[in-house]
Structure formats: structure tokens, C-alpha cells
Length: 321
Ligand code: ADP
Ligand code: MG
Image (cartoon, helix red, strand yellow):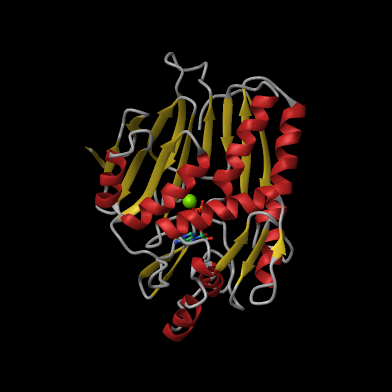
């Protein structure tokens, strides 16, 4: 990750959040960190209390009134889930809780339990009332989980806060979820240089550097949170149809886009679709770009008009489109 002069970090949302600015700006930075704390407090399911938790705790009982941003994010996530129902599902919570991937006690659950939990993940059973801002989970045991999009949403909010404070250049890094704001002054052509981690490398090696101007760069990978049991790797992105972690040819997907929420949605969706289907979709959506790292050590760059990728690892070979 490169070259802005002033770096501010805090441990939030289970990761290291960092802001890199060209000039010091304590007021803007304070406002950003405060906002992240407030939003995390509303959206998290990793603490006993939050707005999303109060919806989950009232499942099967009654609707819960939530704040405007939470309602709007749930509304969008439900739309996406109904549209891309084969791989994205905001009602995936019961499975996330069952597998506990990345948390203490993670293990492969019994087929019976997986089947039971699957019955509680139908996004159609989330009832929204746009007038009252209420959310109702119709079945007891249902749980909303916004883990696949919360950071993307928050990155966009941070971007708008920085712009309000007239900060037009910098890097917002929410641990795998980066927004490169404006252009860089250290690269002759204004590109920000963003490192793409080499999957499973223990010493933070990079597979390459992504160069962008004013873009969100979001990565979903199987190497972020996983466990190995009987030689099989189980990671944290689930197939909503089977209840098991998605199993395909990909190690990671990076989406380059204007909105980080969109990037976060598509990094999960593309991971679920795999390379061929995602490429077909991307060819019809030229504003979105993606970098796919495959288990066979090839790197596929799709719509490389919005970024430059400079490979830095000999093990991988690049395939264009
Ligand atoms: P991260 O930045 O943590 O890697 P991702 O954007 O890759 O997050 O999303 C993974 C998280 O999303 C999981 O930890 C879980 O909370 C949730 N999740 C897992 N599978 C799905 C799915 N199929 N659809 C929506 N959310 C999911
Ligand atoms: Mg995502």
C-alpha cells in the first residue's frame, strides 16, 4: 500500500482500519472514526447488541423499527439477494453462526444441522415496511448478516465524509476493502498503488499491484477466514443453496468500481459465479472491472480499462479477458 504521508489507524470492525491522507486533518479523521463506530454499532452481528441484532432477536415475533441507513442497506441487500439468489443472501446468518468460520470452535457441522439452518435462510421471509422503517423476520431463528457488504457501504460513507471536509485525495483501507480517493501525487500519472495480497502467503507477500484513480478496490478471498479439516479447506463465503462454503476454481476476486458497496456486492457474487459466468456479466457492464486469482495460478483481468495491474509474483501468469 503506497504513499500518502499521514496515516491514521484504529482497530475497528474486527480489522485494522487505516486512513492515509496527503495532509494532516484531525477533524476529518475523528469524524470518520466516530462514524465507523456508530455504523458498526448499528450493523454488527458479532456483538450482543446492534440494530441488526435486535431484528434477529425478534425473529418470528415482531417487526423492529430501525434507523434510515440500516433500513436502506437491508432493503438493498434483500433486492440483491432476490436477484442473485444463487450466490448472495443476506439471510445467510444461521449458517454463518453454525459454521463459526474464523471464530473459535469452527468445524464442519452435521448434514442434519446444515439442512435445518438452510430452511431459515429464505430472503423472501424478510418483511420490510418502507413507511414505518420496520424489518420483520418471519421465522424464529432467522438472522440477517450484512458481513458481505457492510464494509463496502461504510467505505462509501467515509468517502463522502472526507469530501465534506474537502479532503479529495487519500486511501481508505478497511482491511481488504480499499477506496483510493482522487489521484495520487507520487505517481506521474496520478495512480494510487494498491497491493493485492498473495493468497495464503504468511509474510504479507503481494501477487501484484493494482493501479487506480478514484476507484473502490474490494477483494473477497478464500484465504481471509478459513479452517482446514481432513485436508479440505472451508472458507467464509457460503453457497446459499447447499449451506457449504463455495467450492470453485477461485482463490480471490477483486472488483474495481466507483461505489464500494457495489464492489462489495459483486466481489461476493462473482466469487459465487466463478470466472466464466462473471466474465460474461462483466462484458455487459464496462464500468465494473475485476481481477480473478485462480487456484491454477493464473490471473484473469476483465475490463482492464479501469485499472492497471502489475504482477509481482512469479508463480502466477496473467490472462487477459
Ligand atoms: P470479507 O471482507 O469479510 O472477506 P466478504 O465480502 O467476502 O467479506 O463476505 C463474506 C462475509 O459475508 C461472511 O463472513 C459472511 O458474514 C457473509 N456471507 C457469507 N456467505 C455469503 C453469501 N453467500 N451471501 C451473502 N453474505 C455472505
Ligand atoms: Mg463482499
